[in-house]
Image (cartoon, rainbow over all chains, first blue to last red; front, side):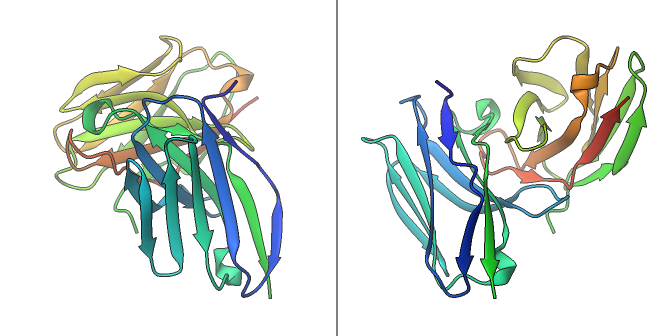
Length: 113
Length: 113
């Protein structure tokens, strides 16, 4: 079993839809959880960063972490064609200098006008 | 714009050759990590440098090596290139050892033929 599992999609939704992206993980030591967005031929861009369990909201984006279920989610409200990208979840057991990130495979999202 | 730049953007090498990839972090970012992202996969951690010392390593052979310089630039060196080394190589920098939020460059696309 991989440490981080993420459905690669592709996921296609109409403009304005609510998008739900998810990852599951097996390592209970993970405490730091991130979502990155990666456009084609670009490096990943940090979207959301959460420590431990709970919710975090930033504009149209909401990140949820449920450590008891080892499950994290990213919700995108009022999705736009510009949201079309690959979304990567990433997590780490340690902050800072030992905080190498373990990534999921990424979910490719397409938002149709 | 993350302030992290990588060069070159694309590179083609022959199997058995050696390659050096470069990364320029934001001024003041003491931590740099390198990742390998194969097509359709999430980034895989190669190693991390903190204040010019290796500070953690993923499951990559010794022919992958690195350097970090006082001017916030760094290098990834790969010896004896293999076809499977073809990937997008990403560097990510962080402000300091206590910071898990990593900011990625746009990557170098390496093709080994």
